[in-house]
Length: 241
Image: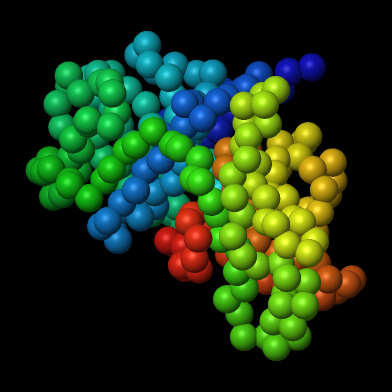
């Protein structure tokens, strides 16, 4: 049975999305980067949904199961990007009504005191899986450091491709090989086998899209290692918040 998820957040548009029908590829996602701290809530990965607005696809940005942003074409035929995080509503729209596709070329503007001005800090690009991710522990707990180091858990994960599906997974070659991969239930995890759908290190924010930045490891009942981060590239770098 298909379930229609009604996503309605204060001040954001309401859309009905059949998540079970969404079989998306890399080309169905846009990465939004923002330089201006005042617009950071717009930042993230926007995935295409089965909804359309004025003839164009609606894209949504989730954190966990919470919808925090939408990217869509408004009634004036402008791309509009809205976010509502922690009760703070942010909105930008394309500078010209003819700025429809490709999204990478769209220039954005924002309203300030009733005047629309160009906002140059917002960038929209087609999402591309990186060639590698780097996992590291950034906390101060010595017990956690020892466990993380003894298990050789941190380090660089290199992208591989599943030939039958052309989907990526990532491998850390070591004494014990670790895999960063999407499980059959569509959550990303880190485990010692591609057939392991439970994993040993988990995301703190579930994502159908790409691996999240923040992870957690359950060592024994009641004890968790937090402050584990996954970043693009081959070195530790605190992710954007």
